[in-house]
Length: 110
Image (cartoon, rainbow, N blue to C red; front, top):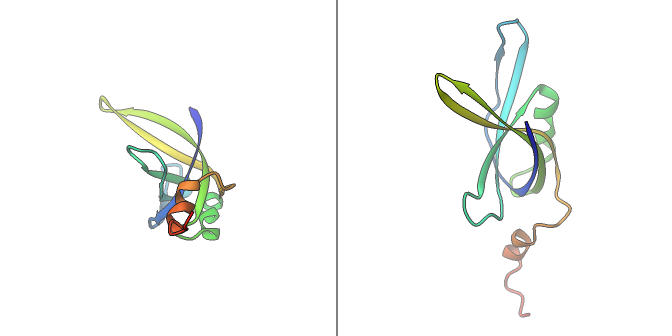
């Protein structure tokens, strides 16, 4: 697994999904989307697994600039590979995302 950090604007929170595993354990996951400053492929969908992690999203609203720590992982199924971006931490950005702030106050005379 490869650990990464990414920063961007929270643009969507999708509905949570849940169920019961083969072992009889309850599970829940929630996907959310951020828009980064990348020139290409700037939209990223990440997944939070587990009730405790899913609850982390409750303290954020659409438009917040967030920093997300996540792991990339790939699994093979029937000869095809599927890649996941599983978030394990989400927090408020420390302000490095100047692009988003400039867009809101771009009418300054200087």
